[in-house]
Length: 135
Image 1 (cartoon, rainbow, N blue to C red):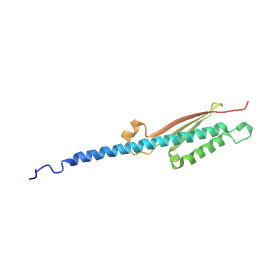
Image 2: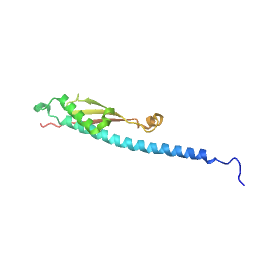
Image 3: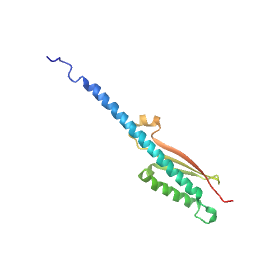
Image 4: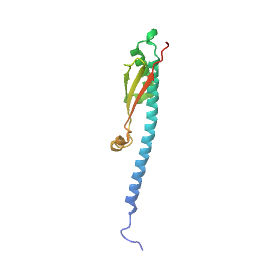
């Protein structure tokens, strides 16, 4: 004999379990994407700053602005479609140091309410490279 009223009692628990699993899965995807994006943006920024620091403007090479434009174009090629989400801010006020500040907006797999407090919504890096000169 079957008891009445017990049909479907596992539905709420199963739905809650599936939701928790999906949120954890999306969190794992967001963490992996953030790690990859941080690594790629940092490497592209370092390479761009190194190119500008190595530009020998005094010996007749292209101007500093041309070296910056070439380095930024190279970084954008390296980042591919992700470069449309990236902003480059150069600081070469000090003649011995090239500084590049890069901010990239990450696409999100988690709701913004979870992503922003964890710091997964953007990559913010500053790279400093010394200019080497022959004396």
